[in-house]
Length: 484
Image 1 (spheres, rainbow, N blue to C red):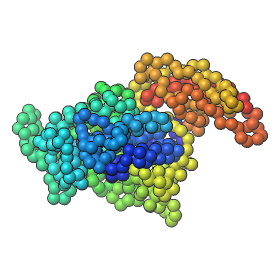
Image 2 (cartoon, rainbow, N blue to C red; image 1 turned 135 degrees about the horizontal axis):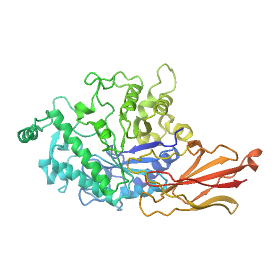
Image 3 (spheres, one colour; image 1 turned 180 degrees about the vertical axis):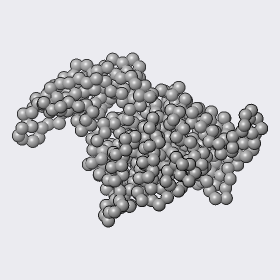
Image 4 (spheres, one colour; image 1 turned 120 degrees about the vertical axis):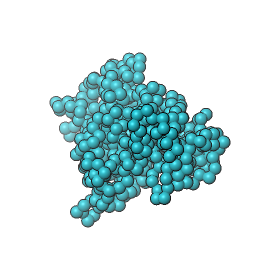
């Protein structure tokens, strides 16, 4: 088991699961999800807060989302701020909260009216229509600036751990539909001082400019906030590029104009989550082919795998007659060195234990706590050691107590602690994830009582405690001996 692993779950709103719920009902729904996901081992929640240039949080820039209250622009009653509430509840459970926005989509197909302060109403010249959607035009600098303004507002006002965007850049192609951007492309060609790019390259460059600017916006606002992107699962097919995968499906590079490998090579994103939603053995997009391809092509940023629960439990592993593909998929993740975790699509299926998936996470794959993947490319500073570690008895219980180390900046301030346990004379290896008994924001740890009789009852143990900063950079350890 790795010591560091990203264990995420997407909580979406665009499917309407919260639409029109009362404040109390939605909070109870989310509490159930968070409690269950925590018990199953999840350590990152990716929460959708901006599905169509609207807000599931208090915003002076964009209207309240219909996916929250049922009517765009209507505030929740009784009033609450879902993003603020989710940050608090996730942190209470020692989970990270990554705010998930859809940058370009201004209107979904089923939305019939927009408020007067919606960006598509205030700036209709910024959007184009495509297959019932309204899309902020990636060609316009004004659109890039606007999305970055919204992002800076979120990052500055909320104590989020990450800013996350998904796979919607230029719209997914639909037969008979054309992206209406020829006028903007012709204007670019007329004013280009050098040899102009092709229209496809120009579209890709528009998205590149946006990703770079968005990354810079996040880091300029709060440098510790992680920026993650979840692209479609195929970068390019080999028939279009010798370096592509042995697949035959829609492509990020050619069809969505998303050059996501360039974003990792340039260091614009902090983690990448390709959506590998297919099963092992899929004729056009085989999961094993794709995870091996991504493992070879994303190496300077954490590679996280977007996992589809439904298809994983629906299909049997090749050569098997019973069971499903969960064991084989997790085996591939463990085998491939550049894979640093997974994100579940979507949270509700894990919460409902669809196909026994949630139970197996809790009892096997995610049963022990782990740290977040290392991101020393953001910063490699560590907190100082904890102070005055002691084991005291409190009403018959043994409790470890310690003091937080001094820290004046986010780089050296401790926000969490790791507790390890080793038996007497056991080799001490803090890279052994099986020795982690807790990762906590508290400065104490209640030691579970020894319930078995025999040799363990009179055993000596050594507990080691380390401190973590916002990026889970770890301090040196401090130890204490505990006798039973």
